[in-house]
Amino acid sequence: MASLLPYRDLFAALAIGLLIGLERGWRQRSARAGGRVAGLRTFGLIGLLGGLAGLLGARLPLVAAVLAAGAVAVLIIDFRRADQLDADNVSATTEIAALLTFALGALATTGFTVPALAVAAVAALLLSRRDTLHGWLRDLAEADVDAVIRFAIIAGAIWPVLPDRAMGPYRAWNPFDLWLVVVIVCGFSFAGYIAAKRLGPTRGTLATAAIGGLYSSTAITAALSQRLRAEAGQRPVLAAGIAVASAVMFARVLLLTALLVPFALPRLAMIIVPAALVALGFAALGLRAARGAPSAPEPATRNPFALLPALGFAVLVAGLALVVRWAEVRFGNAGIATVLAITGSMDVDAAIVTMRGLTPGTLDAGVAGMILSLPVLLNTLFKAAIVLVTAGWRAGWRAALPLGIAAMAIPVSLLLS
Image (cartoon, rainbow, N blue to C red; front, side):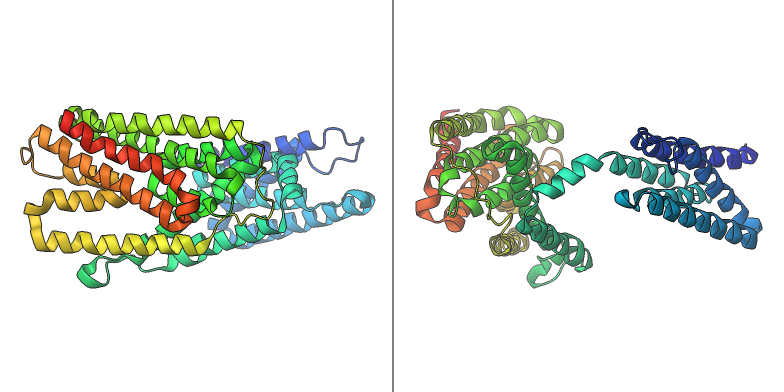
């Protein structure tokens, strides 16, 4: 079976060339006879040649190096000559694609077949999206480009190099995890900005809120709250988005409870379903108010994300993490409800996962449902506080009101159930 591996890898190298050549050939399908630089057959041969170079590298490295150098030289000379003949349509895309095909062909025959095929698929997709990508570039403003670069620094340059270990008092702070909070809030804010440009302010904001609520309704609330103060015309939509994210959080909590701690689900559902209905009702009212209001397009100069509010949110999370660790040390198992409630004010899912780790029989089903309702209550109040602190009372009270009423519905349901 091992003797067939070189043939399999060579076939993969050929497939890589044919895949990229399919897109390049289709792109040049209207070229005049003899004017096509490289198409399906040429790219297939380039991939196969790269595969042969990879196989030869183990036994005849000098021959493989000469073969690779010769192939690269021929490609550069041929493509440069084509550019001289068609000076009005100069592009290095096909040349780079050919060099990449050769390299991926060699990679496929040196033990990295699957990564080579994956990169080839991504490259083919990128090449096929030329018109779409060019359209995006035409629509970009200077602020958009600046935002992309700043987000790349936040998520790609700073976050990966931060220490991933517990530090500080009670070893409560992990710099890597805390900066992830900044990345998430800025990411949701930036995603909402892009969605609003592509789908329109209303649909883009609601889509971002719904998707963000699946991951972290707290983070999406912080991101939308940044816009409440500056975008007066969008406040009904932003308030509806915050309510939508909260409603999605309630549904997510019920689903996660059903999967991880099903014994607590009946009691928990009786307590928080009314609050979820309140959030959905306010979301519908907010959307209706937004549709009835005069059209207010999103400001063209809006900052796609604000870093300082995201940093403030991270500081708040750090403070709560310290309180959680103090409660664990101070109360131990006797403070299960307290620890779960404080933890859940930041992340309700964490409270559910923590309860799953408890010894079976530690909590009665009814008591477990009531305990899980506490982090949901605190998280909802926490998000209302985020709105008021970030946006201010005048700009944020309409968005905080649904959260406050939904939070009030939880103890009322608890008393009536």
